[in-house]
Image (tube, rainbow, N blue to C red; front, side, top):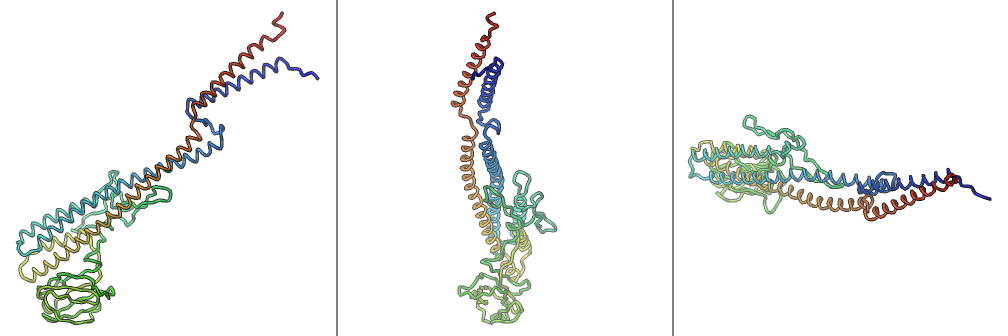
Length: 399
């Protein structure tokens, strides 16, 4: 059987071959121009799909980077602010120690009170610090407005209690700056969870020199008072005012109070009372306000001096506790900054791995592509040459 190939069929095949070569060359030109192995998803659907998935993973890591940078900036600012607050409290402690002496005059103490007022205003400004983006550091989730304000001599917290969680890596979170209520407001008074104080109406000169939990233990967490029944005897009463023990008083000796201990110096009068029990909380602004009020109150009698010493001793303990509280807050922030550094290293390593994989899927091997381009160009030239010669293979050319 004889197969017949028509002239039209030869022309069609030659044209098809040239068009295919031109298409391949055009695709190679697009690859060389873009540097991408996959110009369209049709080139390699599986690799294109994998590349899209990896692109999303890289974009997510980039968002984590932005999250980390934002919260790191805020935590660094928090550290700076808390350092300044700590310095201010150190000055408050220094001034309180300076004022807690009988050698100063009322004028001297009033001058100290004026400096304390200035420090209080400075602390208010620090508590209302911003992060550079118009958001307040210590407002919690309500950080669009200033978290602290003054009204009738009282500092008011206007923020909320939320401490935001920020995702900085897959399933890895850090906490944002602390709400101001936890930094400046809810500060334990006293020491070691115990607080003590002299009753406002005491008529003697008794001053609380020290107090704490007893080494023997046994405190049930209750509140008690030491009430002097005479100049040298006292009763320990519980919260219901029922006497639980009695004792004889000697200046400077430790008084045992149901698992607690209290040392009183001076000469308490009959009916004077000293309380001891679980510590409450007080904001640092109120502590300074109380200090200012104490220092601005004239001292006339020995009882006035004892009241002033009790107030200043209490303020010293409260300021020391507030300083420790700030150190703890700074330590928490430092731990979060350390986590941010770890997360940044992890993100960087993951990003390098993902981009390397993406490059193997999508980036062009120029040496291979140029070689292929030259081969396809040669093939096209050959097809064109064949087509040109085929045009002369006709009987009409012999006429």
